[in-house]
Length: 292
Image (cartoon, rainbow, N blue to C red; front, side):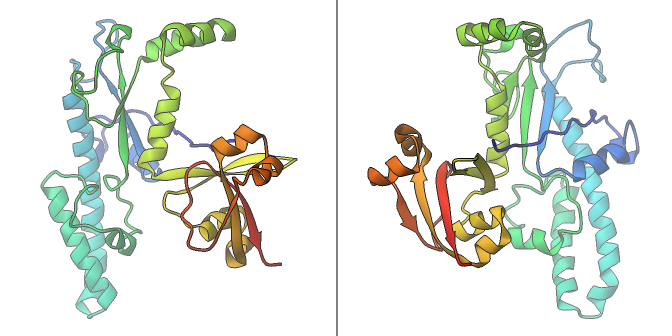
C-alpha cells in the first residue's frame, strides 16, 4: 500500500477573480480547501491555442494570479479584523493578539506580498488565526508547461521561479496513446518521466516524509510531517499506539530490502530500538511496541 498525495485539478484563474470574474469565488473557495498550491503556467508558444491575455508571458501570468490571491486574502483579513474588533476592545487577550497578527497580515498584503515567507509572521501566529482561510500562506510550487523542444531549458531560462518542475503536457498526452511497452521503451531511451518529480516536490513543499510497516499480510507506507517523533508516527496508525507508546524497532529501508525482511535484518544487526524522542527518518521501516 503506497503513500499517496492527492492533486485536485481546479480550473484556471483569470484577472478579476477576487471580484467575481471567471469562476471567481467558486475558484477561491476550492483552493482554500487545499494544503498546498501547484500552479501550472503556460510557457509554450502556439498560435492554434489561444491565451486568455493574448500573449504568452509566464512572468505576467504568475503576477496576475498571485495578485488575485493576495486580493482575496486581503478581503478575508479585513473581514476578520472587523469581526474581532469588538472583542479586542473589551480587553480579551487572545482577541488583542489576533488583532495585532491580522494587522501585520493586512500590511503585508497591502504591499502586494504573499503571507508565506514573511519572517514577521510565525507558525504560532497562523495557529491563532487558523479560522481565517488564507491562500497565500500555503506552500506553493510551479509546473512549467513547455513545448517538447523546451524540455532541456532551466526554470530561469523559461522565466520561472526556482521551485519549478518542467513538463510538456502535449508530449505526456501523446505518450499515453502508446502501448505500455512502447511508452516504457520511449521513457527509458529518451525521456524523463516528470510525475515522480511533481510528487516528490509536492511532498517537499508540504514538509512530508514516509515511514513503512512491513508484515506477512501487508506492507504499507504512512505519511507524516518531517521532524515527527516516533510516538506521533505511531499515532498515525492508531491513536492508542501514541498514547501507550513504549519503543520502536527501526531499520532503514535500503537495509531491509537488501536482506529481505525482519528476520534477516535482526540477524545482521540492522535493527535498532528507539524511544520516545527518536525523530523519524524518511524510509524508516518500523515495528512499534506499545502497552496493552
